[in-house]
Each structure stands twice: as C-alpha cells, then as structure tokens.
Length: 485
Image (tube, rainbow, N blue to C red; front, top):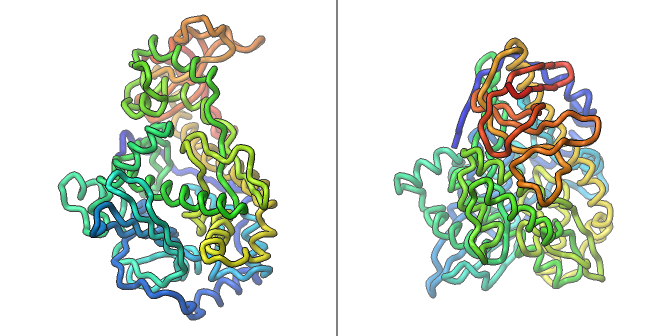
C-alpha cells in the first residue's frame, strides 16, 4: 500500500555507483557462459508443468525467483507447492560465471537499474520463472495440517510453467474483492495461520514502511509504503520454506543458516519501559511480536515504538556448519532455525544452500563444489550485504537532498522517531538526553510531507509531532539536517 509519494527532479545516480565500485557489465567469458546456458536444453527432471503456478512480485520485476500453488489436502490441511528458480542448472561450477557471481554476491537495486548477480539473459530470461515458458526449478512441496503445522516436505528438481505474473497491488485488490486466482486463493488463510504460529513461537516482525525512489516520467518519486496484508502472507510462504530447509540441513549436519541472536531480556525490558509513555499497550504475557503486530505504523507514537524495537534485531549473520552443529542455530526474528533458499537469482548463498538440501533429501553426498563453498559464503554475503544496504540508503538520501535542496529555511511538521543515546534507563524514555559529549542533542524525525526521514537537532519528545526547520540539504554529500523550530 502506498502511503505517500512526492515527485523529485532529475537525479544522477552514477556517482553513487562509482563510489560503491559497482560493476557496469559482465566479463566476456561470464557473459558467454550465461548466453550458452540460456539456450541449452532443460535437464530431464520431474515434469510438474501440469501444476498452474503463478508468481507474485513487484509489478516491474522480471527476476522472478518464486512461483506458488496452494491447495487443500484431501484429508484436511493444505499443500504448499513453492517452485524456486534452479540457478545451479545454469551456472557451471568452476566456470567464469560462477567466479563473477562470487565477486558480486547479490543483486544491488538502484532506482536507475539493478546491478544483477547474473546476466540478464538468465536473471530476467531463461532462469526467471516468467509466465508461459518451461523453466528449471527446485520444487518444495510442503504439507500442512489444519493449524498450519508442517507434516511433510518433499524437495525435487522439476520442470515447471508459470501461468501468470501477478503483482502485489493487483493481488491485494483481488483479495479485497474476494476474487483471488485459484492458485493463490488460499494465501490469506494459510498466511494468517503461519503468522499466528510465528507469533506463538515468539517471532518478531517490524511493520515499518519502506522508502523507495521510483522513476516518474523525466524525474523520480520518493515513495513511502507499508506492506499490504497479501505481501505479508506471501512472505510467510518464503519463511515456511526457509524453516523447512534449515530443518533438513540441521538433520544432515551440514549447511548454511541465516542466524540472529534472540532479543536479550534487558533489551526487551527497556522496550517495555518505552511502551507506556508512547501510549502502547503491552499486556502481561504478550510477546514483543504480538505487541508489534497490533500497531499502526502510520501513527507517530507507534512508529517511534517500532523504531525502538528495531534495536532488538541485531547480529544477523550467515552461519556455515559441516559435522558439528552451530552453537546458536536459530534466527531471533523468526524464532526458529531458518535458511535462505528462495531467492537464488538475487542471492549467491541460496544456490549452495539449496544444493545441500537436495543432496540430503535424496540421501546422497553433498557435491564437493557446494560443500567447499559453505565456509566462504558468510564473509562474502556480509560484505555484499553492506554494499547493497549502502546503495539503497545512498539512493534515498540523494533523492531526499535533491528534493529539499531549494527549500532550506522552510518549516515542516514531523514525527520524532528516535532520540540520541545515552540516557539513564530510569529516565522516562520520551525525554531526549544530552546525546554524546560534544554533540548537540537531537534525534531522527520523519516528515509528514514529503516522505523524508532525517536527523534533527534540538530537544525532541519521542513519539510526538513537532515543527522542524530545514537547516541544510546537500546533494553532493547526500545530507539533510533539520532543527526543532
């Protein structure tokens, strides 16, 4: 759901690309391998083209990793079929293309075009689960009971054919009208069951709106949008698959997990202390995730509380293991063991984790090329995660600065999302402290219009609306600064 959008003028993202050292094209040998793989015959695998899969993605996406089909089981419960692009079928171990994907790590998305993990002939062509074409996939068939609990998992290489490329906005409209296409008609029911199970486990989801910079004619628009219900339900299918993959790898004592420490009790206590002054109800016995699930992120006090809750979600990492199980295998946000296997077109790690799952499920040895990759993947993914995050953040900061460059001195209405630390734990959390020595007090504010989030100096009441004055907007350094008016 789009909450706010503001038109920005022409913006050149080239400097950001150069600053981050993003590659402009693929080496000739890597591109040649991709082009050859794109026209090679599909392998002889299980034929599942009779299943009417559909994809659900942003409207402009062409790198389609996942397709799904949902059905009721004759004896009760549900059958989730989740087809994932089989990238390993197209990338030869030890080849130039594999080497280049290790250099990139993941697709980096910028408003003026992505920097793909794989050449477009694969990522937006022969390997993408585009409609009306046979594609190589790794098919996860997950059976659920009537309460959404997993009762069976099958993993296989298969040939699949998507029937339609659906987008989040259209799917949400169809759901609201009660006219979802048959392959995903059960998504609201299954998604709600999986969400409820996650909350009972202690899962934590941060319902923060996301900022995006999107093309708009000759210019760009800065968009603030929150996920709609159908987007959340769709994410639950990916989480379900990632948990199934983690269980397979832990049982086989080899794999690659996405891990994160559980929130520390003292951090939860601090968040609970912030709830009262921000007007957030936290009944006894209710988990962090359950509290967050009931909040409206468009309200400033709720948004400030969610921003505080983000501090609980620290330390995400990839954890490889072979033989000895990890000391801490769980992901604190999922409240279960979890692995990335559903986005191999966009994330390097997923290709290797998927290959491990296939081998373990089939009772064969994990291929040497996949086993050897596992211990090297955490560092590569951590490095490229930082690059991808810097690209996203840099693009938004540049758009904000360009948008506001000629409005210095104007006053805006803003919500206070965060205030500077440190402050004594016994102080009411709504009062800003003095900040770090030598730094004026301040915090982070979110403007109502335009959709900008930036630093503001001055004494700020957490979770309240205040007038702020724009002090500077510098596109060269991508910096915006406000002061309390």
